[in-house]
Amino acid sequence: MTMREDVSTPRRTKEIIQRHGFSFKKSLGQNFLIDQNILGKIVDAAGLDPSKGALEIGPGIGALTEKLAQTAGHVTAVEIDQRLLPILEEVLEPYPNVHVIHGDVLKLDLQALFASEFIGCSGVSVVANLPYYVTTPILMNLLEAGLPLENIVVMIQKEVAERMAASPGGKEYGSLSIAVQYYSKPELVCTVPHSVFIPQPNVESAVIRLKVRSTPPVSVKDEAFFFEVVQASFAQRRKTISNNLKSRFFPGEGRERLESLLDDAGIVPSRRAETLSLEEFAELSNTLLAAGITK
Image 1: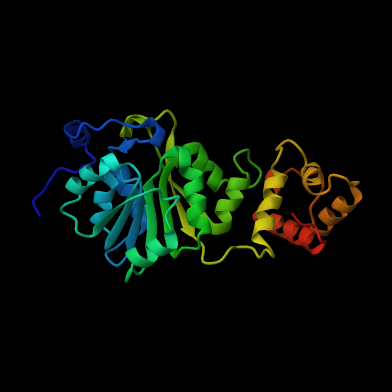
Image 2: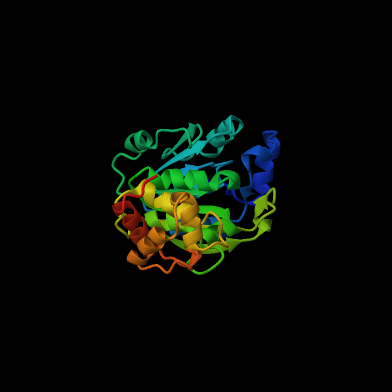
């Protein structure tokens, strides 16, 4: 293979964009990464090797894809923008271990994709510079699908990354924190300045690694109900857990039954949702369910 300048250098990125007459679509949240150091941190965090596979979402012009192809045994990249397909075909021509799929990852059958794309891989990780406007739907779709994933390493909006990794007691901690931590162990890898993108985004960015759990850290009798209790508890952050749960599950009743159930779960009614741990939410949802409280 002849040595070529990496796609991620500013010079080559601009040259590829200009030569193909590519124009950025704001509606697709396109921001191309042009910093090899950050790309290296993303790939390193995924823990890839030639026995493993990587799923990339939104490869753009292939800067991260190129690094993944040099590290993983197989890379599947899903790109929604048809205009980028000829660019990717050109850029990734030296890498036979890459397969580009044109499609919307939110509409793909992920179980079928994994079964066909990663045969023989000892492990698979999702590695991506995600469009910020669909970060949460994509990540929750991946986590809830029950895929055989090791890690999800993604560049996302810093504020969202901090919410995912937050501990109880702070303003960042909320229903997203609990959902992500139910399925994975989040860890902030690094923060990323505006200047390493073309075009530069208006928000700060961060790389986060979600180490996917084989089993949840808590036992809940009904996952859907557990998440409904969490959502209801955070409905109005300034309200107490008692007030939020009463509005959702006990609208026509007095407070006595609810506060008795909170006591059974070991939760003081005057606490706010942001002070409850994952374990306490599990105990709360199981207690309500056992008492016949349903959706």
